[in-house]
Amino acid sequence: MKLSRARRVVENALGILVARWRVFRKSLEVQPELVDKLVLASCSLHNLLRSDAAEPVMESERLPVQAFDNLDGIRRHPTKYASKSSRKV
Image (cartoon, rainbow, N blue to C red; front, side):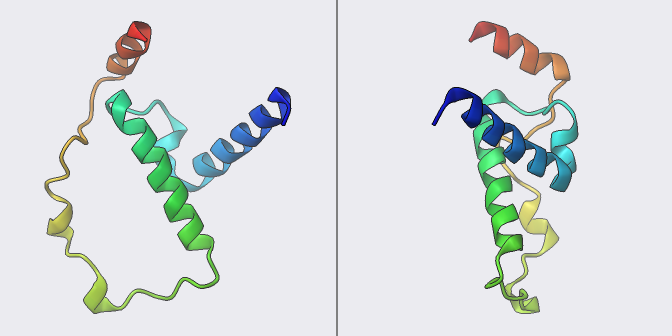
């Protein structure tokens, strides 16, 4: 695959993510190490939602809201944090 085509594919994929998930409409305010996981999780959720085989979730299978209270490692950081970290790379 040529580099220009690969770039188009990536830009299209990111455009789809931006259209579906509001978190991608501005700079991500998370630690750089978490960006890969965030993008992969978003892609997985997108694919699950698009899947024809996806069945509705039963009420008994839903997680209570409290299950998300202690998500380790996911904190909001000032936008400048990402810029400082990217300069180190």
